[in-house]
Image (cartoon, chains in turn blue, purple):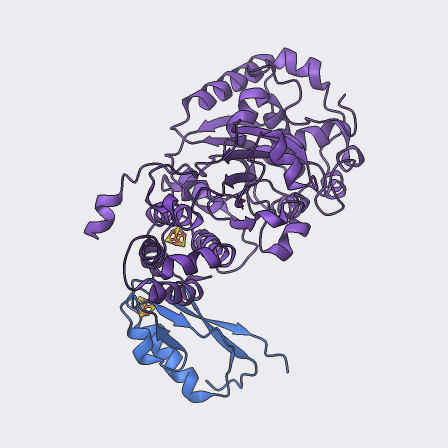
Length: 79
Length: 424
Ligand code: SF4
Ligand code: SF4
């Protein structure tokens, strides 16, 4: 995006909107897995923006969610 | 004036009928202090609705919001079937609750007060209507008082669900990504406080913060209402000072002298083994035991009862009361109830069910929009711990007599939505 980003992000879920279609787990398998009822469990760990692969797959998941229940939240990574 | 270490406080002067405005003025005297946030902070009052959040912090958060209309919402929904404190309080001193609400309105700059009582509670609605009329007859006040009657559901009393109802006529909890979160009715920020909290504020408004602190401890000052039921000779609502030993409280209700355990905090609370009965009744002392004061409910389980069966019944009911918005709550809680049922009925997979309960508890925790599933997880975990030996007996096929009896300790309303649940 031109702008160099430091810091990181976490993936956040609105459980009210989510209907358990499970697309997110397919699109971002590193950050999301499904529980026994098919609802996503997020790792909740901050990911640095420098991890391009994770960033890309997360963006796919956010766009691919049919209920728009996922959101990327910026956080400061404290080292 | 009520003496500094005199009890009861919020139930002071109770006659069995709600006090009229004239009687109320006579018993409690005039409001002494102008609304001030500092007074609230010095008093150290925490919410009595279950979460135990500092009242002044909430008031500060709402006070800092801009907006020319603000609401104070008095939460007297009382979703816990075992809780009776709010209706007892309003049946005794409705004007004290309203005084507190007006004081809070003064602190945050609110122009409207909404009192919420569930519509299944006509007695309390009557008392409040009457009290509001009395106040309106006396003066035209700056703050308007309105009474709202949402339908009764366990989660309808959750603060975001209550505000959702006032905003949109839907008693469903809202998703709040960041906490603390400012709840809004339309654009107007809303301060939600439990009815008992308001009554304590009404007393702080008269007698001040240092008077308030003369009972209880540093972190839990004042007194609290507790609803005691189960194996007691007089199921009742008592007002006790914080840090009173549990055994003393139980004795006042005429409880079984040698119980097995007590359920503290309500249906989203935790079991406490009877060997801890000398613990003081306040959050600091109870926290290391995994318990808390919660919504002020104590249910006594006698030695002849079965904690597993009680937990199973409560969990089943709580699963039914889920608002079914969030998957882990809508599917996870019935799954917990099913596992608990396997522990209480003759079946071969009881051992597997016990292992599954542990896994499912950690799978569900913290994944709902509100704290409803977390409460159930807390209850189930505490049952697994407190009744561990007993569950072992069940797993080995040695069922207690109580698990087959139809006599139960915890009052659980009938499961009207059971059919719907099976169908889903
Ligand atoms: S894709 Fe969206 S709706 Fe589907 S499970 Fe994931 S978060 Fe839920
Ligand atoms: S966690 Fe349960 S009760 Fe709370 S909003 Fe979600 S579905 Fe409703």
